[in-house]
Image 1: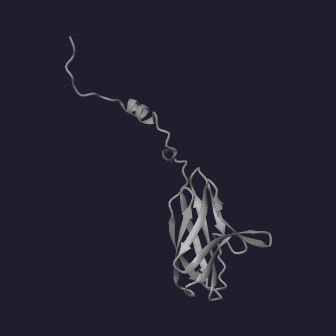
Image 2 (image 1 turned 180 degrees about the horizontal axis):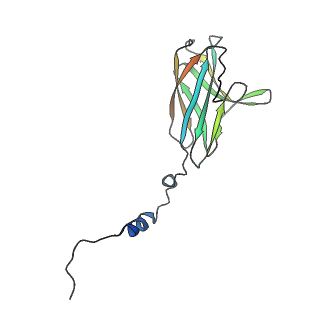
Length: 155
């Protein structure tokens, strides 16, 4: 004789074991890239056609990513530049290391805003969109600082 059907009880341990089975989604393990931006600024440009931008992209995740392009309503073109020694060159992207940061700074890697649609003034903000290989795009509001501004920390 069979027992009548009733509610099924699952212990907490069994539930944990069941939910852990078969999941290979690396993002659930906390290893995906977790990007954020800090210390963004643009020195007020000295020309009407070109400006530079600096910021720090932090990655608190266990997977590296890559900054592949940048767009802004301020300029027709925004390019990513790598600086090695005394030479600067446009590159297709810059790596954002796992559990690390990509620093864009004066004298180092940076963004170039070319063919400006207008010359931004100190106190304004410039909106830009950072695009990555794996992560969703990040929109940044970059304040325009004086042409001689030097950050005291963050870069």
